[in-house]
Length: 216
Image 1 (cartoon, rainbow, N blue to C red):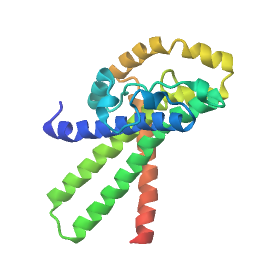
Image 2: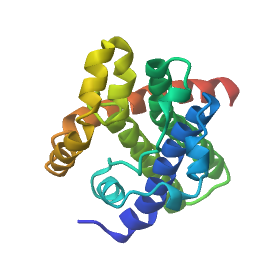
Image 3: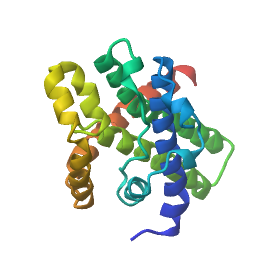
């Protein structure tokens, strides 16, 4: 069951996660010479421009989902396959950066408020917000890196596939999305996503703690 805390924290973090994810796709594609994202108004941090109803609901309910895909035109890239891989990887990378910054800032705030004598309840609220933000971004990152179309992971893996096989599989991505929706609802990706999130959380925690020990 969801409570008020899940809604108040989960919805904003979901919007931030998917907005930066899709903006990163559009921004990199634009840098590679493709004007399509700009023409379609996707080079913005306004969440409304990126929302996909079903993907957003799944993101809020399950911790992973998708936004409205940024339309790109790979014909503008010097190397279509590499360009598509770079554009695809930009989204998950944006979520990782957000998660890392969220954890770092969260720990810094907890340390600051602790030294200022803030109450344990207040510090607990800060930790909860940080945790939601980090986990939500990592869920979005790991889910989208699964190497099946139309997820970003498949386009990244496309660098290692023969062109004829890669583009043949891409033609069926609109059908695969329905299978992904069903598998998401029954929790088929939970183990993969949970393992990935735990790995990256532990990694970031070690790095940030080392940084704090050095600079503080």
